[in-house]
Image (cartoon, rainbow, N blue to C red):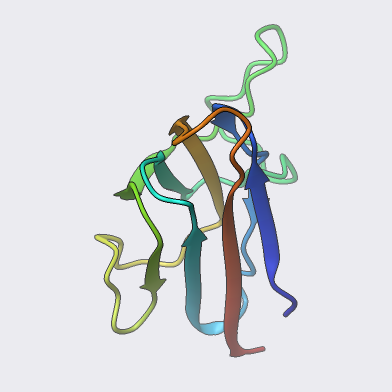
Amino acid sequence: MQPQYLSLTSTGSSPWKSANTQLTPQQISFAVISTGGSSYFISVALEDPSGAYQSPNYSSTVGSTGVTAFTAFTGSSNAFVTLGSSATFPVGAPITGYQFTLNTQSSAGARVTCVCLQSGID
């Protein structure tokens, strides 16, 4: 699988990205590249963020995807974490998606990038 780049230049969240749940074991690495001083977190979900398999929490009137986000990692400088068989995340099960959120920036317009790479055998 090719790396996914989630770059943010202002506070907010990236769109949800789907993880391949058919790979075994599911291993996903996240590397956050920051100039330092930025506050961010990575969220994961067990519900399908693509909407193909809608959660019972989905509401078309609110525009909600129905995805319940769980914070898996928080940081404020460069970081490298892995989700998988030797997980550094507090998640012991496969995930269906992930999202990157920037809380505060070290300076206005400073880019913070989360590089995500998933491996496994299909």
